[in-house]
Amino acid sequence: MSQAALILLVKVLFAGLAVVAVAVFLVRPVLRMLRTRPDPALLSPTFELPEEEPEELEIPADQAKPDRHAILEHARGDARQTALLVSRWLRERK
Image 1: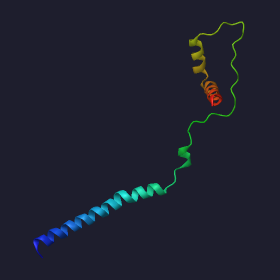
Image 2 (image 1 turned 90 degrees about the vertical axis):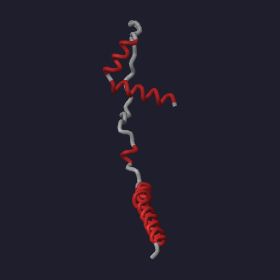
Image 3 (image 1 turned 180 degrees about the vertical axis):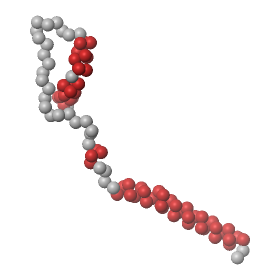
């Protein structure tokens, strides 16, 4: 066997190994990923608001308009009611 034939044989073996490596480490995982269906639990939002409506916040007529700081403190104090109110406003905007 001549030296040129031996070099050609080594090149063909390395090319074959490269094709096998690409198939094993790239093509198979991509095909496996495309075949699997996504988990529905991962697609749903993790934070869901209850469907109940918040009670209306009304300012009595005899009181002056509260300042911005008081409104923010009230919103931070009752986060659940604030979240329900904001979600209702967003639904009404649609």
